[in-house]
Length: 336
Ligand code: BDP
Image (tube, rainbow, N blue to C red; front, side, top):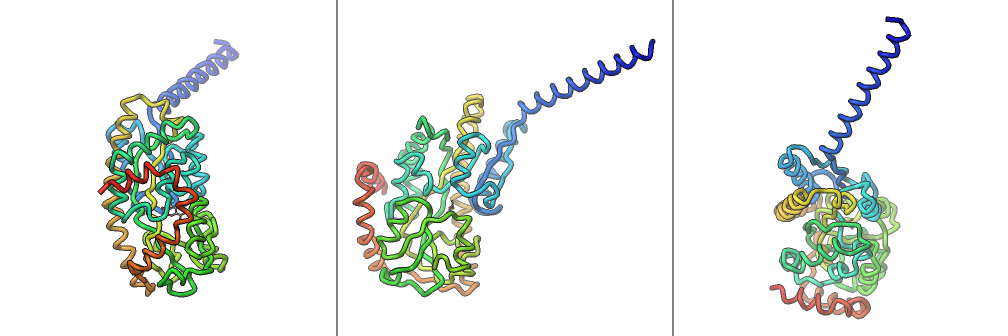
């Protein structure tokens, strides 16, 4: 064989090998999908752990065709960015507070109204009821949402914390600069309670507390504890003015390419994650309270009378936003 021919042959065979390997790679890329999942909280936080466990089940039950890579702790940005990335399909799964979801589907804002639930147990019953499923479906079917609502997750109740003084009464909130999530309902709620509500991303809050840009914020005990906000704001007042469920959303761009059976399996596992998250949540909440006590945080319980005063004070928020949710609110209240 001429040397020239041999070189040609070699080139041809290595090209074939290269093509074969590209082919093999694309087959395996189709067969195995690694979904990106994200959450503002760190590994071990109840919502993160529930999604990690859901991913493991999905992997086992599809013989590895799907798995989840978790990007926790705001690695992919705040919740606004997380929503956008999921809508375009750069991320498949995001766990989001309903706080910023009202801008996507307005009905979801009903859960953002102050004191809409009697207590956490009531909120849990509502998300587990037909109302919960209807709202998930509303999100999935909204033509512009580009998201599938998979399930609900727990987040307890939100209470005020600050660096200045113990807040025992509604009057004590007066004039305090309090960070709220970016939704006008929350800023108006803080203002109706006499504080000075400041909308800000969760990712900016630690620095804002540290430098005194805000005097305080409001959140559930696990967020207050795990974000270490208590190191800068050591008065925690159990006001429970907002009980905001959280939602697990999936990218519609990815969903639409999945076989029906895989979609059904994911929905089933998401329902299991909802139940699992609840157990993890209850445990974590107790552990966080113990941690806060150990750290010497002053924990103040609002009296029923003060709570009643707060409920009356937020009436302007209900007057401004509540009318369009009247029927839904009635159904929520009917859940016993
Ligand atoms: C936490 C929620 C998280 C929100 C955060 C906030 O779990 O989704 O981003 O509050 O206040 O309780 O922004």
